[in-house]
Length: 241
Image (tube, rainbow, N blue to C red):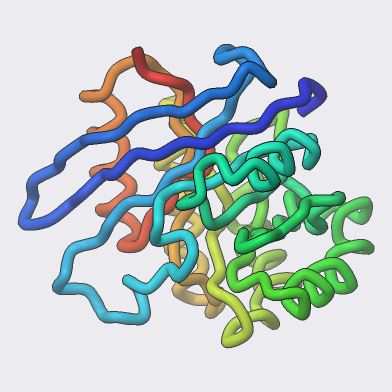
């Protein structure tokens, strides 16, 4: 992520009694172009699920910042734009100068490579002590250009590096892409969840990304993820015109 960007994305995806509904909008500022933005949102869950799987705290507002330049977010918070935005993440384990105000920063380990794991315990602990209530596991292990790790190895690494935070924060699974290639996307997530059932991975919700320009295809993807994992958070997507 080399392009400086920040985004406020608000989309409500409701899933109840087999029906999907979509209603949302994207808010941009002149600080960055539309085509460089990433997206963050959350899926509301059926009321039949256990309360522990439904309570996402700050993530439940469905408005967030995904950024790699904290100054862009600070411009929003300092000027009180999008006062209902309540959480932020930056693909890193520390907030890198984010002025929190009321934002809940969500640290991510990104991958189990040494360059990330050597910083993870200290940074994650510091972020939790500073008020963070959620953490994210790895980033697109299903893609060779991202975390690039098979599901079984990712499950074992999740247990090693992330499980220890259960009870201190709500934990997100490794994020998947919506790739339809064999062994990627939904296939990868299915195997990760299956492996985790045996290893005892601690996680409260699954994280997915989606890239495309069709609302219908987005909803199909979300419904497919929901069949695998009950709690869902979308932390990256393309914009939909």
